[in-house]
Image (cartoon, rainbow, N blue to C red):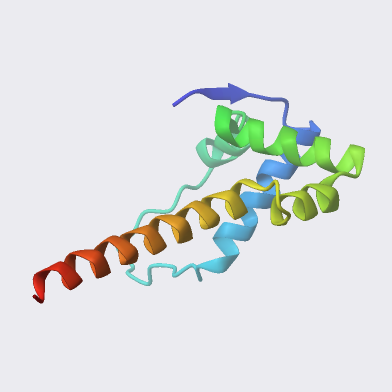
Amino acid sequence: RVTKEVDAASKEAKSFLKQQEKTQSGAPASLPTVSGVKRPSGMSSLLGKIASKKQKMSTLEKSKLDWENFKEEEGIGEELAIHNRGKDGYIERKAFLERVDHRQFEIERDIRLSRMKP
């Protein structure tokens, strides 16, 4: 896994933080109610908040973010969706090949079964 450090005020960091907030808001946070739990207090917690490390972003996350930004800037998102659903789309070709393979299997099975019943 490759990580990348970015400036906290950059566009990439902001979008990454938004993604993190979405994933965290999906799962409700439960706070411990036990009185024996230590809580950071005093100068150490303040220094920890001030000197926090930059958010790290993996190469996959960066690539996905760049691709989404490129699609947005060029306005090709809808065109890509239409193309992928069409005749030349990868998913459509895979589905077609799967149907052909299944049909060929059924034909061969019928031939084998017909030869078994003399």
